[in-house]
Image 1 (cartoon, rainbow over the protein chains, first blue to last red):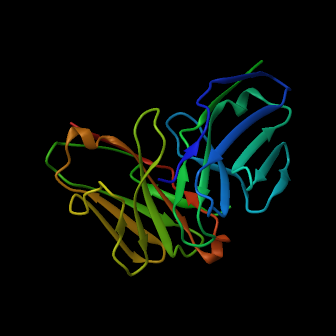
Image 2: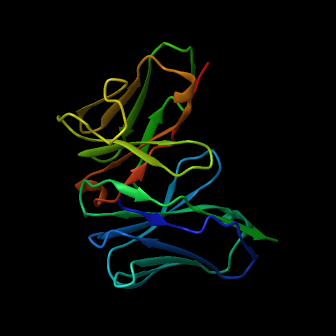
Length: 112
Length: 116
């Protein structure tokens, strides 16, 4: 059973702070890792993907991957109230034409 | 980024009838499309994977005769829920990937199905 685990939250951070979202996965063969943001009643929106160990930065977002620990995280700097959403961690076993296994998501609340 | 469009965004149908949901990749060729279902406050659950021109591969527990998937072209996949029941009411989401999308997976807007 390939599992992707996330803390359901809610994670509450004040506006301007750094939000840290964590995800662990069970399949050691996983090769691709994604973070999606999902607003209530809407489809997931891709934020970032990461394939290699280390950090990947894109604007206010930084994804961190540690394959040895089977751990991937998402940091959101200068959090804004509009960042309040559910963040889904997704893990894939390939790099082409593969399905993703999703965690249940972490609810983030950024308070003004 | 790439665009994947779903239609209809919301549909209500009577119990026992069938309803079709379309998923289109608008600016890339989607060699693979995926259909997910999401119940309220639950994660996305993969229903099936379809490759263009091939039969869909269904996940365990998903009835292939009830959820008909067709992926006849590189830009269109359809999901038909046959003989719908109220418990089929859910948020159905497609996603697509292909070389021209950089192999990144993009999601459609989702379709809310309510069976009454």
